[in-house]
Amino acid sequence: MKKILSIIILTTTVLVSCNKDFLDLIPESSVTTDILYKTDKDFQDALTGCYTSLRSAYSDMYIFGDVRSDDAWHALGNNVTMNAINNFSERSSESVYANSWRDYFLVVFRANTILAKIEEFDETAIPNKTRHIAEAKFLRALAYFNLVRIFGELPLVTNLMTIEEAYQAGRQDVDIIYNEVIIPDLLVAEAGLPATYTGVNIGRATKGAAKAILGKVYLTIKDFAKAETKLQEVTSMGYALLPNYADLFNYTKNEHHSEYIFDIEYIAGGLGLGSHFTNSFLPKSTGAFADTYFNIKGGLGELNTPTMDLFNAFDTTDIRRDIACDTNQIFFKFFQIPTFTKKYIAPTASLNDSPANWKVIRYADVLLMYAEALNENNKTTEALVVLNQVRARVGLAGYSGLTQADARDKIYDERRFELAMEGHRWFDLVRTGRALSIMAPTGMSDYNVVFPLPLREVQVINDPSIFPQNAGYD
Image 1: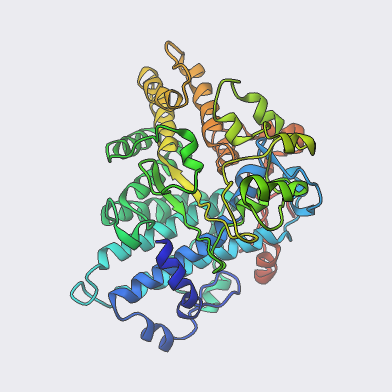
Image 2: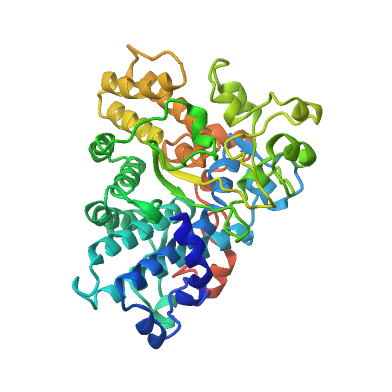
């Protein structure tokens, strides 16, 4: 998949370009799209265009998932937007909101275009038609899942619209988005996607990825029975925890291992396709040492620094602590930097050209969600067996004999320790109803469970009866 991206990215902007206004709904012209979508390869290349938009969208996922939470902060303190998001004083005009809205809806637009055009062909002309439909719907569902978790109510866009229709596309209830787009799309995706890929296609969405994301969706909407069923299915698909936790973040090794389910793929090599996480998350004042010790070149950002609250929450014997929020490097102690995450450290030849992927979902996440669903379904003993698999991998003793309430707390804690600095913490706090009680001391109000809609989108529609701003951000 990384090889495909490196080739296709050079032409994707031309092949699948679109209007940047509002929801990115309008194709350039019927002539352009009619010429584009003719062969099986045309559709596969167009789908790669969806992945390129996800690459852009996920470059800011740490802001929503980590910085907003109690796990991370902007330690350098010179970025007004990062500080505002960290302390719940942001404005709707922050560029990160407009960029994320644009990028995710660009995925939606591209997927809708593919789905509309592919219906004109049968499988004699497009042999992989079923797979392409499944892949487009997976990508659309993932985009909508992130959009609804970030912004709440959204326009429901499942086909190509005229400009006039787009201006009337009001916000739909969150339940409608889940039940009419996200869940149906993922059901189609799990049925139509292959279990594995080979060669350059490795990295595309698979059946396991669709099932895992669907399990997370069910858990998010508190349908614990369906979550248990779906996540159990993933556990029977051949995935396994890596024996060595640190290998998850060793980018000299194959990233598509037994624990891998779905990543956002980045490619180092000077093509502009690398990730910025390596440079952005290390302390800014230690650039020369980063080069000497880690072979990391280019500037450093200090944008996503683990909190001491996270560090102190770990058991002192938990090996994950010094990977999620290390304090042991002498030169970092010398510069008075309390913590930094080692989850994205990889050699970089130039600024923001790291091979470090963003892990959307991996098998440990599935096991912890499965344990949570089992526990909520009054199967606490079974839940602890699953939970203990994750603890055993890092040499920690298992739990037994816990009440359902105690097991719930232990599962929540384990998610924090296992998945720290991977963009999950804020969304976990919100979906489990703990965000306000934990984050109120740092400025959170009840309306902050969602972020403000981008100001420009509100201004474009300019009609609160169709497109109102989220409550509290007016």
